[in-house]
Image 1 (cartoon, rainbow, N blue to C red):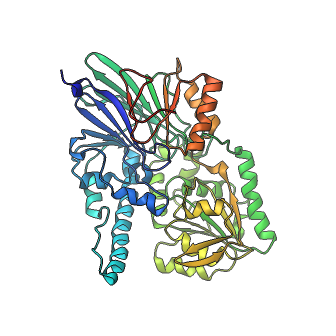
Image 2: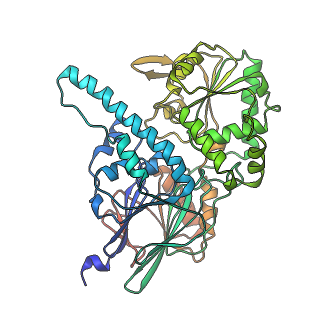
Image 3: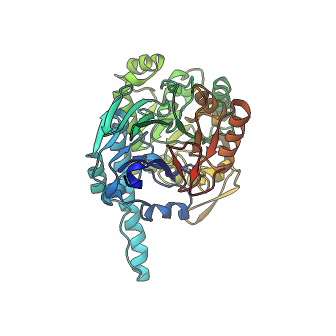
Length: 482
């Protein structure tokens, strides 16, 4: 029997020591399964890595399992197909629905970015570049999706079966259980994907899993505790009231199109009168977020009971009487003329692209305006600069003073904090070996320390391209462990 036929391992090829670009390769004998295939986001030098060849031959991959629709988990799937992958992409049906919106948008942006770059290159006489992937590549990828439901174990390859459970992160997000059989040996691998938070609106709590031989878990907020839900609601109410009292400028909310935007709209509907929102104009300036909101509405049976009932009550009308969708670029530009009384929700969530940049240009320099940061901001992004207290930002080569008040409302995060991650792992019987991914070094190290001290967990932090032999758990192959 060849060495390859005896292989039972996982290799961490993305989101190892960083947050974006999730991609993990599981090998069971000659069969290869990819867990996620996400886009690397952040600084230009980080995003340039998306153009590097995959560290494996895409034609040799037998199956892909996608945890959820966010681009840092799904965004390189069209590139994978473009590079030769022709197999199935298994995912929850709601994730497939959201990917039709998100990946098509990513394909459009990829083509536009290449077009913009090539105009500069033509003027300089430089060789032209191809888009990272095209809309045609996206359509090919979407054609390979195989839709699954939660809670059903299904064989996807000889010796490989999977079951998806609700991760509570965004609509359709999944914890993946994999049963891997090789030469009479069976190992169970559990991949958390991105874990949500318990007690949050709209989605169910993350599903606890009780048994595993190896757990691969995210660590985005592994060294932090979020504010309580009550504190978060009080903070938001205070921002709206203070803005009304002290001049009533505009409020900008950079928001991820999927997940965060729908949560914000839900809160606005629930606390409409209490927060005085009837005195504002509310704009959702993101066509992708508007489309994703429609997808949420079609899948309201996946919501928690309270949210599902409220969503149904509003189905025939807008969630908010003063909510306006700005779908065209012309409608978006009209918002720049509004000096006060507007709450503008726009992408991108990390402020590195999309319509939010235009709104920052017209509002960030004004002392009577507010910017509410509601989600994770990767290192090197414009949003991270705002969170870190930058006094000046650059937009299209122009330096803009930041005089607006910047509020970081961490309590709205869709990621579990340190306590949530530890609680999810604590449900496993026998404290199985644990590998931390999807976190900056300081976050993963902080979580690993607490897991060892409080739960006596055998924990490792994944290093880029490191491997773990599932037949001999606890031993890393390749890069040194931490």
